[in-house]
Length: 498
Image (tube, rainbow, N blue to C red; front, side):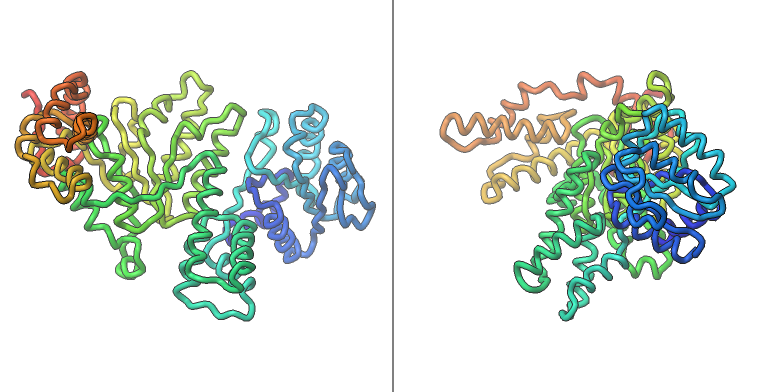
C-alpha cells in the first residue's frame, strides 16, 4: 500500500493527466486517493458516475449525469489553477466512443500544465489502441497483513483475540479484498458472537471462491506427501533441505526466499505430483496457473490478466505457484502470429520471475524443452532445473509399493514388487498406476481381489509412451547431459550415444 501511495502521489505531482487503476476494490481505492489528496492539500477529489453525475460537487451538484462527455467537459469549466483528482467510475465502458476518445486525448495535452488528474478505476485494463500512449496504468495491491490485522481488530472491538488465532486469521485472509474479508468475518461474528479457530476454514472457503472467480488461478487442496513420490531421490533431498526456508528463522539467518523450480521430462513421470507434494510438505497454499487463461481476446486484456495473476499470487504469499506444461503456454513467445501478445505476456512473466522479492515459489513443469524460449532457462529465473526421467527398476518397485500400500495396506506382502518392477521396463509412474487400476477392474469383474498376475496382464496390454517417444526422450537426455539440468534420480543412467 505504501508503494501505491508513493507512486500515485508522484504521478499527481508530476501532472500525469490520465491514470488508469486496475482494481476491483472501488471503495478502497477511492478512500486511498482521498487520503493522498488530503495530505497534498491543493487538490479536491471529485467522483463521477453515470447515474448520479458528480457527487459532493461544490460548484454544480449532479453535473454530467448520464452524460460521460459532459463529465469530461466539466474539467474545462474549472479555473486552470484549480487542483482536482477526477475519479470516473465505470468509465472504461465509454472509451470506444470516438467523441470520448478524442476528448480524452485533447485533455491529455491541456492538463499537462494544470494540477488536474483524471482517474479511471476498473477490474481489468482495457484500453483502445489510440489511448494507450496517453494513459498511465497503476496496479492497486490487495490488502497486506498489517491492513488485514487492523481491520480484524476494528471488527472485534471489545474482544481480545489470541495472538496465534489473529496470526492464523490474517494469513488465511491474505489474497482477499477488504470487502470480502469484512463480509466473511461479519458472518462469523454474527453466527458465534466472536471469532474462533474454526473461522479460519470459513475464510479459506471464501478465498477458494474468490480465486475461482478470477478464472485465472485455481486453489488446489494439496494432500499428496513427499513419501508418495517413488524415487527421484536427488529432487526430494533438494526439497527437504529447503523445507524451513520460508520461516522467520531463515530470514534472521540471512537466507533469501527460494525462487522456484523447473521440472523437465516426458508425461507421467511425477512432475505434477511433486508440485502438490511440495505445497503439502511446506504447509503452503497451492495455486495452479493454466497459462492459456492469461490470454484474452481484447487488446491489453492478456497483459492485464498477467498483472492480476502476479498481484494475486503475491497477495497470497507465501505460496506455491504451480504452472503445469509451461512449454505449451509460451511456445509462441517469439511473437509471430498473435501481434506479439504472447511475447509481451512472457516478457512480463519472466521479468517478475527474475526480480520478485515476495515468497512465491514457482514450480513449472515442461514436457518438451524445445518449445520453451531460451530466456526462461537462464540462471536467475529458477533456483534449479531438474530432469525427471523414466523410473529405474528400483524406483518402479518403490512406485508400485506406494500405490499398492495406499490401496491394499494390509495385503501388500502378497504382491511380488520385484517381479512387477522387472516386468515393466520403460513404464512411467502414471502408466504403473494405470496398470494397477486395470488389474483392479479385472479382479472386481470376477468378484475377487486383484493379484500380481492381474497387474502383469494389464501391463502386457499397455504400450508405454517411452516406446513411441524415443526421439523426445533422447533429446531430453542429450540436453540434460550437457549440464543444463540436474538429474532428479540419483541412479538414473543417461543413455547417450558417444
